[in-house]
Image (cartoon, rainbow, N blue to C red; front, top):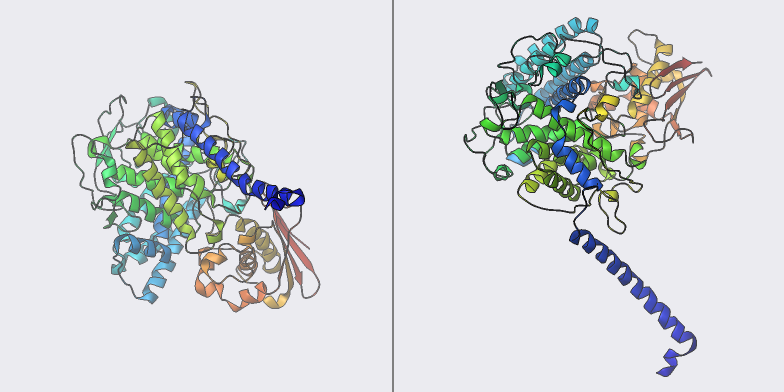
Length: 640
C-alpha cells in the first residue's frame, strides 16, 4: 500500500484531496461571513439603515408642488390603466384564481366589449398627454364610448367605476399649468413621458384629490381652490371622504372616513383601537377593492395581487429610467393597505401620496446603484425586484413603522423578490408586478409583527449575497435624509413616462421611425402602405433577445417585438391599442411585411434607454430607400 504514497501517486492523491477540500473551505468561509453578518448589529451609517431611516422619517413637507402633481398624475394613469387591464384574459385568470368565481360571457360579446374598453383607454391616454385645446373633442368621444358601455347590462360591474373615473378625469383636466422646467432627459416623443422641458401637462388638482397640508403647500398645487377643504376626499384612491379630524402627532391633518367608494362597496371595519392588521393578510373577510369590479372585494394581499396584474396586463403602465414600471407595484399595495385600516386611522391624502412617493423613490435609488440596471434587462424583470422593495417601503411608511422595522421590511422583501426575463412576452409577465405589490405588502406587515431579517441586505457585503444578487455591478451608497430644507425626490428631477400605446417601451422608438417613413409613402392623411411597394425592411436596433421576435404568435409577444411594431407603424402610420388584437396580428399585409424584415445591431446602439436609437430603412421595389430614425427625444423625419 505504501506505493500509493510515493512519487507521482502521492502528488495525485494530494491534488484530488485539494480539489475536494477547496469547495468545503469556500463554504466554510461563506458560512462564517454570513454568521458574522447576523451576529453583529449593523451600525447606523449602513446603506440598509439609511434606507430604513429615510422611509420612517421623511416628512410630507419634503414633497414639492412638482412632485405632488406629478405623482397625482401617476396615480390617475395607473388606476386608468388598471381599470382597462381588468378586461383582459390575464386579469380574469388571476381573479378566478383568487376567488374561484368567474362570470361566463359570450365570447363574441366579450371581444366587442374589450374592444370598446380599449378605445376608451386610448382616449384617456390621449387626454393625459395632449394640449388643452384637444380636450373638448376627446371628452366628447369619451362620452360616446361610455354611453355604448352603459347600454350593456352584462357589464354592470364595470360601468359605474368607469363613469366615476371619467368624472374625476374631467375635473383633473380643468387645470393645465405648465410644468416647471426640468433638466432631466426627455424620452421619445411616442412614449409621452409627461412634462418634457417646457411642455404643458395637466395638473391633477381637483377637489377629488385635494390634500390636507399647510396653506403654503396647498396653494402651490391647488391655487384656485379657496374653500376650507372640509369634505375633500380621496375617493379615487381609497373610496373614502375626508373630514375634519386630527391624528396623533399630525396637528391639523384631515382624516379620511368611509363613504361611497369608487371600486367597491364600503368595507365593514371595526372602529375603536387599531386591530392587528396582519390578521387581514389572508383572512376570509374581503375588504379590499378590485379594479373594474365594483361589487367585488378580496383580502388585501389578493387585491394587491390582482390589481397589480391588471395594471401590467397590457404593458400599458408608466415607466421610468433606469427602466422599470414603478406605479403598478406600489399603488395596489397602498390601496389595499388603506382598505385594511379602520375608519379612525385612514391615511390623509397627503400621507397617502407621501407613502406612494417613498415607494417610487426607493425603486429609483436602488436602480441608480447599478449600471446594469440602466440597460434593457437580461436576467431579472426590474419590477419584480425593485417593485417589491418599493411596495414594502410604501406600506412600511403607511404603517408608521420605526426605522429598524422599515429596514427589516426591505430585507424581507429582498427574499421575496425576483422573476426571470424568460417569462417576458408571456401571460405570466403581469404576475411579476402583481406579486411585487402583494409580497411587498406582506413584507411590511410581517415586519410590523416583529419579524427580523438581515440588517445589511442592501449593503455590499463580501461573500454574502444580498440585494447585489440581482445586479452584478451594484455599488450602494447610504441614502441621506436632507435637513429641514427638504429631501430632493428623484421625481422632481426626472418625470415619469406614459406610453402612447400598450407595448414594451423600446417599441416606441421603432414605431415612430417607421411612422415617419409611412408619412412619406402615404402622406399625413389616412391610408395604408401596400406590401407590393416594399422590397426590404432593415431595422437598426439594440441587441436584446427578448424583444427580437420576427413572427409573434400572441398579443404578448407582439408587444415585445421590434419587427411587429415597426411593420404595424409602417403599414398603418401608427400603433394603437387595436394593433394587438388577434385579427390585427394575423393580417396578411402585416405578415407580408414581417417576412421582409432584417435586423442589424450597430455597436453605437447599446441596449440602454438613455442612449439607444431605432432606425427603420425601407427599400422600395423601384430602388428608392427611405429612412426614419428615432433617438431619445427627437424623431428624424424620413429621408430618401
